[in-house]
Image (spheres, rainbow, N blue to C red):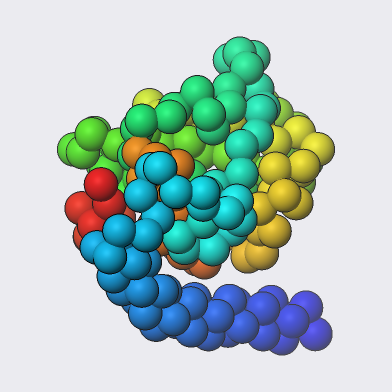
Length: 187
């Protein structure tokens, strides 16, 4: 019975990821068209939200090292905001590609761990060491940021441009080529 439920969940996540991928291509095109028409430039009021073309909501959490970090600390940088957990197989699958992406491109990766779902914080430390991750790992202790960003499923990734505007949203794991493609579409 448990296997059937797990298979159903993965099939549902895969189906949703395909739907999201096909619908996001249209949304990205719409945003690019609006920007070329002069709408959405830095002088315009852009609504805060979770969809492509909206300003990503700010948050503050602690890093794995115990330092405070917020999204607004990275204003002016192109950001890959990724929500993940150590127990999540698709999250584990995309981590080597994320590290490669971080090493090869001028991108800021903020990997928000859903720490409230972990058995213990030491698991996150061990995971970072095991995968050789050099980008910042942020700890969402009470899952407040995940709730704010309505994270379902994980991993979920937002590509945010240097003005803080969401340019791409991905539900499910991304591979290196897709990360690069979405990054190169941002300003």
